[in-house]
Image (cartoon, rainbow, N blue to C red):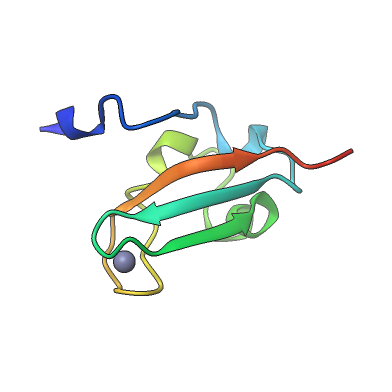
Length: 81
Ligand SMILES: [Zn+2]
C-alpha cells in the first residue's frame, strides 16, 4: 500500500500554482537513485497548475532509467529574493 511513503522526509502540499516560479524542486528516483532538479517554472509548463504537489511524484518520469511514478520530491528550495 502507500505506507512506504511514511517518514521518508518532508512532504509538500498544495497545488503547483502555489509555488514561486523561481523555486527549485529536487526529485529523486526511487528506482535508480537519479536526482533531478527543475524550476517550478518548468514544472508548470509540463503539468496543469491545479495539480497537487504531492501528486507530482506519480506523474513524472525519470530521465535516467525511464521509470514512471518513482520520482519522489525530496527538496524545495525557495527562490532567493
Ligand atoms: Zn530512475
